[in-house]
Image (cartoon, rainbow, N blue to C red; front, side, top):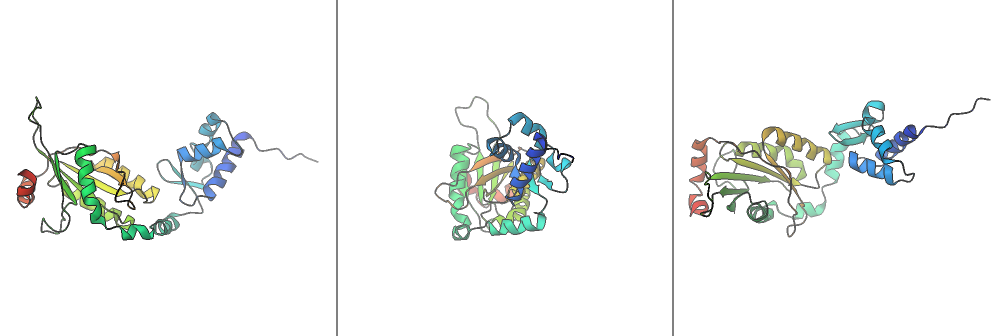
Length: 253
């Protein structure tokens, strides 16, 4: 009678990885999958894990897929199910916290922690009076009197969204703000689906928009964290002057 050959170490790692992904519908980032395989049980050697799972979606295409860079998901959980899961992750607390409550904390963060501006104002609403929208926060960066080399004044705009179902809209708004600002930020909840954040990360890197995450359930401690820094560019000064004329007294006096 022929003996059944026991699975090798790499095959066992792959089997365990598939089981972990099956238990995590949202998927696992490479680092988290690596950590769970390394720490076990059963525990595997780190070097063997790394050389085994880096192309897991290629070796096991019927069981594993990558919806975005560095994210592994079981094939049972397709895009439609992932979208449903993203809706389910919006907790009641997220709806109780008004988005405009984060405007002032974001303005303070841009000035005092990120040090991106020397003055920041919460705006929101329809102050700019057109359908292209008004940024939630706008700021200016000016050289200090003590600076040896003086730089030109720069305008920074930021769009924040507490609703994880409005991320595409928010990205479009942040893009529109580049028309009149030197730098534009998109600020989204860290509670958003990992795949959504990964896509925004790639889009912001391509378009030069800054990407920041925050805790949409905690106004007192939003924990703003930069994922992508914005690239400075020259806006259309016609629109810069047109919009800033509406808030000139607040931003420059």
